Image (tube, rainbow, N blue to C red):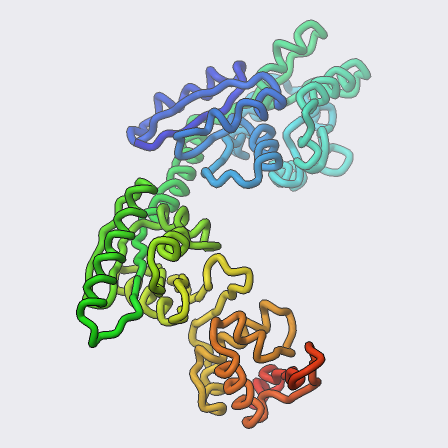
Length: 441
């Protein structure tokens, strides 16, 4: 059962409650009432607990919440007065009021974001109605309801309008003492049903993403000739995984292999464990609990097989010196090492130019992609062996070999020498020329 919160004013509640009579059995509707935007801001975070989606009775509260709570990830939409709703109600009014003139009315919910409900397309500039403001941005105001009410009263008292057309359900009651009877337009049941179906699709999409399989590949560095050490590390790692699962109240499926373990979990728990792919709680936990390093590769895929393959590839990026974690997503983006300020994101998708560069330099495409990622991280095409060593988690000697190889093939030149210490050799600063070489292909 999908739980949808409907946020509405008390005056809009009667028409909003019609959702309960619609043929939508998979939905449970919860209603919450606010009396001002200040009140809505105060209660909003408490009211959205344990719901799957939020529907607002109108665009003003929806826009207000989007502006003031931009980090809310729950699907949110608002009920619309569609063009069909607007013109059906307007046609009925014109039929009974032959003297109606569009230029002598105020429509307080027309703005460029809803294309003025098409009114610009059939009216001249002189016949266009009064509106509150041209953009919904002006509605981001704690006093917006009072300001719209004041505009109706002002234009009526100045005898500039014969009728006000509004979406605000409280206005007829508020304007009655002034002798003003506005035309209230509310969403039809059909447009309400369409909006509910739209938010259901968003909710279902999020649920599919949250439930997709994610696999962690945990590989130990061991001496295969030392059986006792192998068994000890296997038991220690397994116990540590169970302890982590228990302490964090997460249920894992754990697959054991001779030299590794696989953890199968869902995307929702994966985001918690990796702090939205920024760090890795398991890596931190194992670093404290175990005296030997563990390579952790997280794999996300469209299938278990793809997730397993990505996890294994990600684990191969880890060093043997310390416990590290990398992620390889289904979009083939490599992220890591997690939790390290020097972590990089490597795009590993096939690229014909990179493939040709790797052939030319007699190196792997991944090596080229990793160097590009370091350059992107540093926002520069000049790097040192220390830069490569830091960002890729390799030794300075290995980084020097990579840069020397690029220099030999004309892909890098030594631009300057840095003297960081009073003694010792100066550090070579290489300028990488990948962009210049791309034009050759």
